[in-house]
Image 1 (spheres, one colour):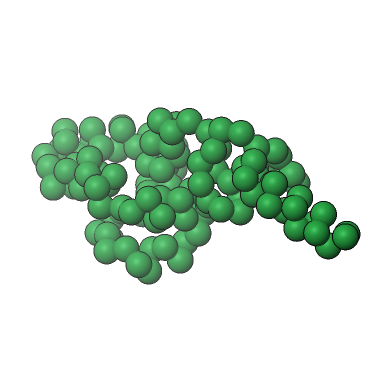
Image 2: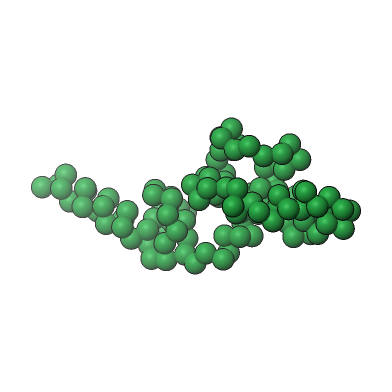
Length: 112
């Protein structure tokens, strides 16, 4: 989908589809943080848990999450799914400092 989320929302408002525009404006209230994290991870099984109109496609939902995730600082940890500032990149996945320390402690305990 090439159109930005804002452009699509403005299109609805221009055409008079105020109900659709209102749904798009209130997505942050309709979705739980865990669902937003799962969408960010491209987990389409989250669609089975959500009650959304049929015109709200996965691409539009994913685009909304990507545009709104810029407001959060940090990166999404691949293990705990929390947004953290400090961590390491391993196999092109971000791992937060807390998870990295846990893995390191587990590895050290196995070697002893």
